[in-house]
Length: 176
Length: 355
Image 1 (cartoon, rainbow over the protein chains, first blue to last red):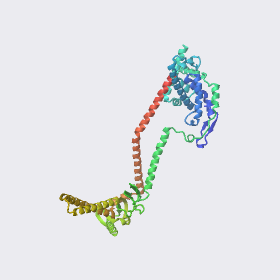
Image 2 (cartoon, helix red, strand yellow):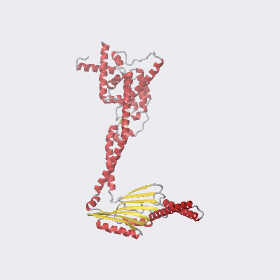
Image 3 (cartoon, each protein chain N blue to C red):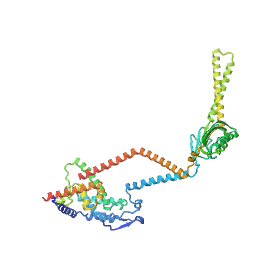
Image 4 (cartoon, rainbow over the protein chains, first blue to last red):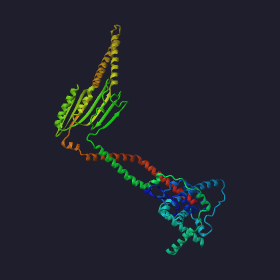
């Protein structure tokens, strides 16, 4: 993680560099966006949720404790909660709409593009895409990813290997 | 499927490379939006100062600290309590409005253990009121010879204050012995007598009980007056010659019954007044055997250890009680927490699979 600016606590015994919010936002924006893009599978939604995530992070920035984990993991936790809230509200909206208009066309914004990898990613579940994003793209370690996802390290590792295997199979099918 | 591990590794690397090459950078518009947020106002909180500890680690630190605190408290308690050989513990239990000797219509009890009698702490009888004043005093004396002397002295003290010895029970056994005396001393002089008695040995326990008899005496007085009036009225009626025989007989029976009742109430009244005029002091003198005396005169460290042990035992009992009382709540809270977490995880899984 690249830290542009940092402030130091006034307690010499506990000297610890605490990055500024703007520095963290600058360095982690792409990572959070990437994670949300994989999680939602929708570029527009990912952008909205990224903005929302950073607004939330801005409000609760004083709660961030660098001794407990990296800013990236902390932001991913907020991003995940934001995304789950979004899924929940989307589900409610869809249920409401289904009650009145059964054949409303879904306007899906293609998230990843037209290639075989992009198509395969689209076929993965959100949980699978999420773990791939955190471990492979954001390069979080196993325990941190598990903590963000709220699962055990073993479950996280299993989910990742299953997701990658499935992704590879889907790509192979697409190529064949 | 890859044929070998090398193929698998190669394919995996390719996959990771392809994934990382995907166009996933945040658009400039979003970046600008986040930049506009700026920097939140910074205030240093306690969280910034305290070292980061998870609740598990906190528990690991807190548990030994609590145990250490408890042991320290026990040791301090033991050392403080063993500081003097005669420590005073005054327990006062009152009912009604009074906490001193001039309690009205109430009962006062003062109990002290291993205490030196104190003129200020000993309740004094209220002048002008009828009170049942009872005290007990336990004294330790050096040996059997001293026990005999002190018993005789106690008798003399009772007499010197205008009182008497109601009973004496003295017994010796080997190197030890005990003398139980019941002294009746006029209430007006009981305080002085009590303090003189307390000087006969080392006070090991004392107890004082005052019961107000004013109400009882008044009601007995009223009843006596009523009965006397009733007897006088019946007597006047009986003097009349024109009374029929059956009425006369009934009145005579009534007068006899009233006279009997008057005799009984007058007797009770006299007894109450006697009770109120004389206090009762139960004095116990004890001469302990050499071994027992040695045991009683433990060293300071031994006493401190014993006190600390009893303190720890009390603390343990309280903790056990709390654990027993709170355990159902703890179990309920744990089940609730576990259920909430399980529900949240299931909900998350469902949402992610539906997304």
